[in-house]
Length: 439
Image (cartoon, rainbow, N blue to C red; front, side, top):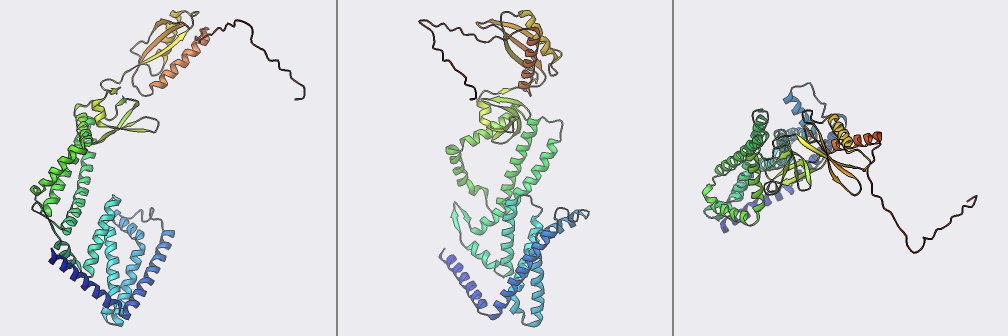
């Protein structure tokens, strides 16, 4: 361990001496001034290009690869202009003076070209975080290679190691593993999306089976990708036994809910008790299932809200599935009339109004019954069927409004509470109000 730290210290000291020798040269300040001037020109050029060129409509009729290349170049105009100016300065100084006196300009030109190449390569990646990680990592490696410090940096990163259960962990190993994992997971995501599109197009599979297959494919590809990445950097999976045990303890202590939701999600997909498109009610939440995730389901309420309900709640709590086996829904409308009305006429009017509604099922006759002789009047219950539970409250409102119109037409009154007040032992004082003209 001490020898490794000594080698790293010697490398840092040597690099510091090289930088110090470069700074003391007067040509350093000339190159630095040219670099600053080129950076200013590049920034001004980039601002002018962005103000006059519309990247969205640029080269619309060109072939896709060429159009993509042009758009990336426009987006990276400052870097491209800076690289061109550095190349011109390098060529001029090469012929005017010694090549070593334009070393910084050469390094700047190579770094700019490397960044352009990286931008072109990463432009096909849609994930912004992965783009940043890959771009910075690749540019760092390119920079070390350009200045000739890549091999010493690799040796320094590989020199510091920690032994854990026969596994030798070094910063270089972790960097390689991270890069491979990002690449493997990115490719896995592409393959999973392709498989998901093909599965969702299949009309022979139910929505729940489609979701189950997609989840299984994603999990399987992720496990394979991680195993390949670990094997590529030389990590034996048996050496991870200690980490597997720690993960098991963590699951036992603090991840019960996550695991329970994951297992519950698989159960829901297998038993098909709920599926995307079902209209459900759980507790105070009601709506149609829009998506089923590994940890939760998303229920769209119809008013812009979405309820994220954990999968475990759907397994352990009472769930009303309005469309589990049959979408036909019974609508119940309760109303009342006073005792002056003919109950038989009321039931007939209510049944006719329900049958005339556009959403009422034609093959099932509505039914209206007298349910109670209450203190304020007679109470009735009207029931009829509709083909889909969506908008059931609107259907009830339409029927009740039609009942109101029919009652007005037939002279049937809706009961309302009547209170009679009797005053004993005197009369209430009455205040006389006199209106004065002009006020």
